[in-house]
Length: 218
Image (cartoon, rainbow, N blue to C red; front, side, top):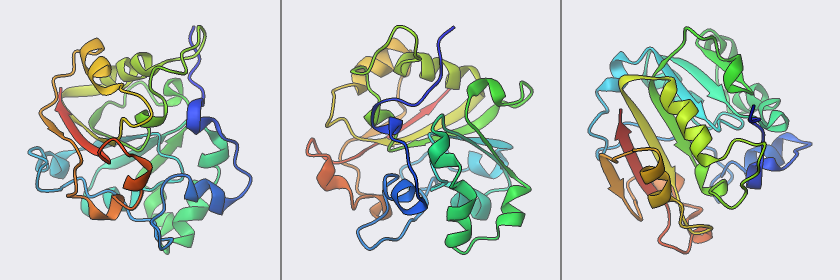
């Protein structure tokens, strides 16, 4: 059985909160904004209102948690195999001034697909700054690769669920291979997307046109 474990850029071991948070893309001024899933180019933003469960794949220390908590009534499920990041998840939320106890009533954090209760399927999935660091260049015979991960996510999505991604392809040209291999016909694909200014401070790290918005409805 293939292992779901950290690899690539996500394989770093963190020993303090600031380094863990910094590697999940703080802004140049040190702030740590969530992703606006309801950006104007998302044709499925209305589905956020009725979503019961939202998966944040590669959640790290919880960049996207506050947006989900403050703008939806959904339950948030964060998934990341890197336990040296997720151990700081709630510390970061506290540092950001969020109501941690209130958030915990609707949020669960896991380190393996198999840990997520089998009765939970998702109406939305989020992936921001994650797949770009995995690609196909780290393939191993015993570790889940990009396609294995995609199939796991897709298998847990309800019919009509939406997968929202914000990624670059400067380290490897992986997007076309990934969509083809996994029968993903993107409903939205905007390269060099600038409609999420809170997330573009790191565009200089992506010389192949910055970061790209991808949205797919199952």
